[in-house]
Amino acid sequence: MKKTLWTLLIGSLLALASCQKSPKLTESGLVPLPQEITDGSGTYELSTSSGIKLIGSSEKLTHLGEYLAGKLRPSTGFELPVSFDGGDITLELTGSDASESYELQVSEDGIKISSSGEAGLFYGIQTLLQLLPVEINQASVQQVDWSIPQGNIKDAPAYAYRGSMLDVARHFISVEDVKFYIDQMAQLKLNYLHLHLTDDQGWRIEIKSWPKLTEIGGSTEVGGGDGGFYTQEEYKEIVAYAAERFITIVPEVDMPGHTNAALASYAELNPGVNLPNGKLDSVNKAPLDYTMPLKNPQASELYTGIEVGWSTFAPKLELTYAFVDSVVREISDITPGPYFHIGGDESHVTEKEDYIYFVERVQDIVSKYGKTSIGWDEVATAKLLPGNVAQFWAKEENAKLAKDQGNKVLMSPAKKIYLDMQYDSTTRIGLHWAAYVELDSAYLWEPSEYAQGIAKENILGIEAPLWTETVTNREDISYLAFPRLAASAEISWTSQEKRSWEGFSKRIPVQGKRWDAQGVEFYKSPKIKW
Ligand code: TNX
Image: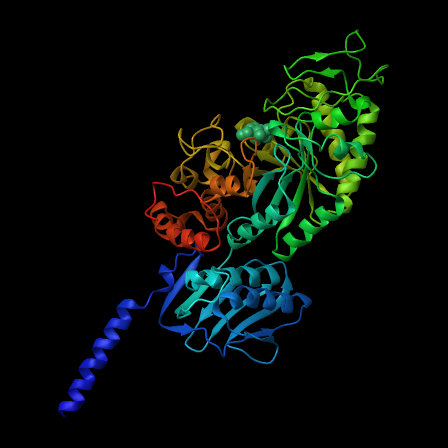
């Protein structure tokens, strides 16, 4: 009798202790926050005998299983075989659509992730990785109980386009660093990476029919460094690496402004001599007539400063469109995604009517090569083709013009989401022309309420651009992008009514530990108890 009482007492004390200790699924620090989380009781533990079981038919299933195993093996040291035969972690593909939604169940005996789409399974895997102790992100074996609280998650994204942009033109970014960024994006369930491939300071993509673009135009960068460019093979490597992580590359050739690198490479594309002080000086001596090739065309000089709005292609010169045609054709050929970004921003020295004529012709070229154009919001002053997208960054009236034409808007308001904005006046790099953007400010906005007249149904998605005038290496990229990219990812993924700054500020420190484990040097915002 006495013995039984003691056993009972100790038993209930132990139960109480484990109950207090056992974490809940709803307290796991998931970023972005899933739409629905239901707590169970007890835990599941990953162990030496764990394995990954595949159900469904798709060539990519094995790849997904191996991707997950590859993430789990280094820190657990477990074998984690992947097969169609058995295993306590099940990846079940129930269809063959493009669904990004998934369900994740954690029970005592195992984990099951199911989705009708490969992308959904991939996002379920990302959630699973965040449910495990943060040590799962370490590259060497850790002595940890790999347990996960039991319960259920049902999840789906709020927006179809959840993106970020890297400006590889102002400072060139190596293939390796782009891959690093892609890996980070994938963990946040982002699905589009926009590469700003050309600007005044550099041309970063090989165009075989116009080789001087990279030979000359790719030879420098802001501050006068060596610059660089991607060969088409390297670009394809980036595209493939991104695709394996369900990220689509959106290439941008910015035009007709922001084109000095091209104008420095080919004299015959110049409407005149471009001067960085913002003036156009015709070498024909007469008023500019873009319809005729110049008699003695002069290439402009390479530029390594950070002024904007002073260069332009010649919109009335036929050669301009032959050039654009080749560039769009070659890049479209190696871009499987649906979008081609034509830039169109800050063309301050292009005559308004010329600008409109140019944008409309370039849209036709893009469409001829089977792609849909995206352009910075100024393009909405032209007549957009059906389906084309305007990327809102500065002017609400432009977003409104796009909407009134029946076109969708991609939301990138500079005051909230420009990753190159300084956090505050003491931030060591970054600009502040739009605002200082601390983490709370980056989090506290809602795309469907930001610009007047632009509602959820007018919005394709959200994109956080990282301009690189002041960014020279991976450490700089990490410092400006993280944690703000996580805020942007949550705004893109999680429905407005599920989000709160209070919730985010409790979960983001867990994400901070994941970044620490992965060697990501993020900004330790003073708004957060890290
Ligand atoms: C504006 S945003 C630009 C870029 C600059 C950026 C710096 C946009 C479409 N144009 O050319 O790099 O500001 O924040």
